[in-house]
Length: 455
Image 1: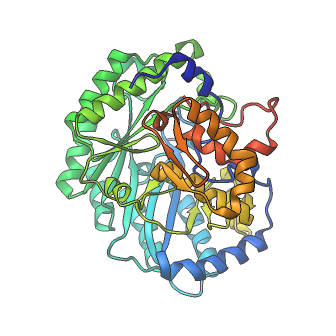
Image 2: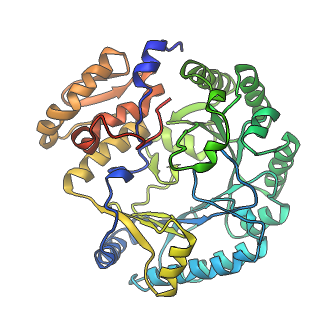
C-alpha cells in the first residue's frame, strides 16, 4: 500500500509505543513502597487463581555494546557478575512471595535483557529452578527467552527446554554486513541458521526473529536481502520494529552519524517493502510491528480476539498481573505500575537493605483503567466500542482526534465504535494517542524528547 509523503510527515511525531497507559513520562518519580505492597497483595489474591501471573526477568549483561540498543544493559566480559545478580533476583522474588497468601501460578515467563544467554546454562537452571520451587507451573504455560545467535549454545537451548521453554526469540536486526558494522553487532547469517536449527532439533515450537527498519545505512536492496534470507528459515513470528532513535537516553546511539539514518520517506518504504515480502510469503499482520504464520499461537490468539499487550509486547496469555524482577524491570498490577531502580548499584543497595527496589511508578484512577482498555483494544484488535459513561470525555478529547484521523483514511468511527482501516494499521501508535488523555491534556508543545518518532 502506497503511503503519501505528506501523510508520513504529518504523523512522524513523537508518540508512545503504548506498552502501558498512562505512559512512563506521566508516572511519579517516587512511589510509596507500602502502598505498592498493599496493592500487590490485593491484586495477587484476585488474579492468581483466575489467570495466573506473568513473570519477567531482566538479565542486563552483554559482552559488547550494540549502538542501536535502547535497553537497560551493563557491558562486561566478567562472568563472575552472574552469581551476585542471581542472588539479588532470588532475594527480590522472596520479598514478593512473602506478600502472597498462596503459591503463585506462573502462566507466562520471559527472560529479557541485555543478553539472557550471557548467563551460563548451569546458572540459568539454578536461577529458574529456585523460582519454580515456590510456584505452580500450569500445563499451558508460555515460557520464552531472548537469544543472541552468536552465543546461544545447544546447552542453553536444552537446559531451558527442559525447564518448560518452548519459544526463543533471536535478535537479528539486519543481515547486511555494513549495517551490522555501524551498529556494532557483527552476526554472520550462518550463526543464525545454526541457532534456528538447534532450537528446532530440540523441539522448540516457536522460533521468532526481531528485525529493525530505520537503522543507519539501511537500503531497500539490503532490506530485501535480509527479509528474503530470514524467510528461508521460516520463523514462526517476526517482530519488525521501527528503530527508536533516542540518543538523549541511550548514549550508545550517539556513536554513529545521524546523517546515515534513512529519511522518513525511505524508512516507511523499508517497512512497506518488508511487510509486503512477509505477507506474500504467508505471514499475517497481527498488530503493531508483529507478523506471524497461521499456525503460531500469536496468530491464533489474534484471530480469536484474545491477543494481549504489556511490557513484554504482544502475548497470548491474558494475565492480569506482570511481575518484573531485576534492575529496571517494570511490574504491572492492572491498577498500578512500578519500575525498579535503573542502576545495578541502587538495585543491589535496596536488596541488601531487604527493601523492594521499586522507585518510579503510578497508581491508576478509574478513568485511567477505562482508557487503558480502549488503547489495548485498538492496539490488539484494531477496534473498540465506547462506553456511554465515557462519552463526555471522548467528545472533549478523543473525537476531535478521530475526526482528523478519519479524514486521512486511518479510521472509521461513530459515537459507539472505532475501526482501524488497512491504511491506519501503519499508524497504530498515532491512533492510540487519540485515547491518551494524559498526553492530550498535559504535554505542552515546548516539551521535547519524551518519546521516539512514530515512523
